[in-house]
Amino acid sequence: MLYYCIVSLESEMRGACFRCSETARVDVGLSVELWNKGMLWDKLMGTHWLPLTTVKQSSKVITCFTVKLQVCNY
Image 1: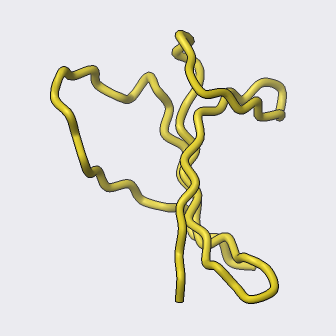
Image 2: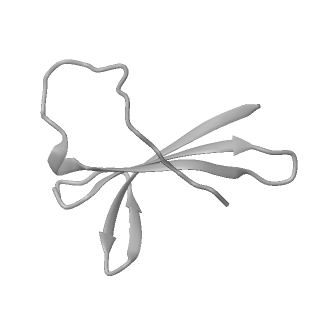
C-alpha cells in the first residue's frame, strides 16, 4: 500500500476553509490528512486539526512530531 500526507495551513470561517501558504493570524491552524493511494481513487485514512495557538515557538529545527489522527470509516 502507498500512503501520502497533505499538510495545509487553513482558516476556518463560517464553515468554509481558505487555504493559504503563510499567515500572521493566530486563529488558523494546520490541517493534516493521511491518504491511501488507490488504483481508481484515493481513500482518506485520517485527519488532524492543529491550531496554531497550541504550537510553541522555538528557534530549534524540529524534524519530526507525532499527532493522533481522527480515523475516517467510510
